Image (cartoon, rainbow, N blue to C red; front, side, top):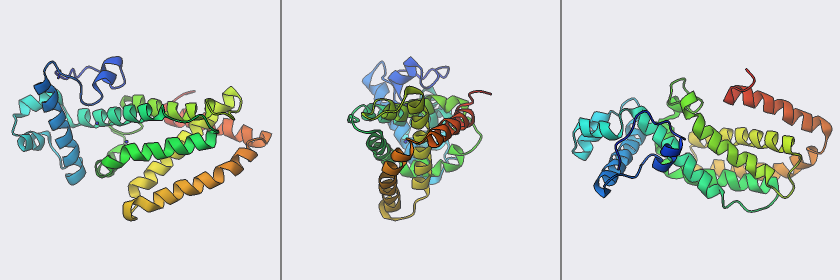
Amino acid sequence: MFTKKVNSSLEPGSEESRRQRGRPSGRTSQGHEMRRRLYETAIQMIGERGYEATTLRDVARAEGVSVGLLYRYFPSKRAVVLGLYDELSAEYAARAMQMPARKWRERFIFAMRTCLEVLRPYRNTLSALRPVLLGKDEESLFADKTAFSRRRVEAVFVAAVEKATDAPGSRLSEALGRLLYLLHLAVILWWLFDQTPKQRATDALVALIEKILPSFGVALLLPQVRGFVRSADELVRAGLFGEGE
């Protein structure tokens, strides 16, 4: 959507965590390589076995290391999942910087397709994490500890509107950007459940949205529609980010 000893007190999204991004640099190349191997093995196992069926002991055994050594890098499965969120959202934000200066609807489609490109290599793992992503645990996509990832990705969609050549007023741009972020979440959920070969139905859905957006852009000129966007944004901010409570 992923060395130095892990400091379990570090919060993903912090300056130090951004330097680490799931695979922090180490004091030695051997330490960095070991962390990378353990991380990728854990991600692969989760994709193959599921989150609950995967244990850190299994990961350590697969790599031929002690559980104690593994805990130095990943004190829990939660640390692996949060590392994945951090890595994927950071990679996505970096790629989104290549977004061309065009109309907001074109920038949204660029952002949407770029997101799918970043997540695609990890689809098996993310699919296995569906109960976690949509659950109530700390690993949930909507948990407080994963807010850093939501904010990072949300900022891409807000910027897609605010920096567009046809950006509406500042307040409306931010509200529209958040609604597009919500739309992107719906597309990603569709993608995770998409059973068509190579998720062709998802590509078709994005193409359909691309055709519809110009009409919505025209409708956005109406005061009623602009009011709807602002009201809907208040719900998104309260429901996804806990603002205004």
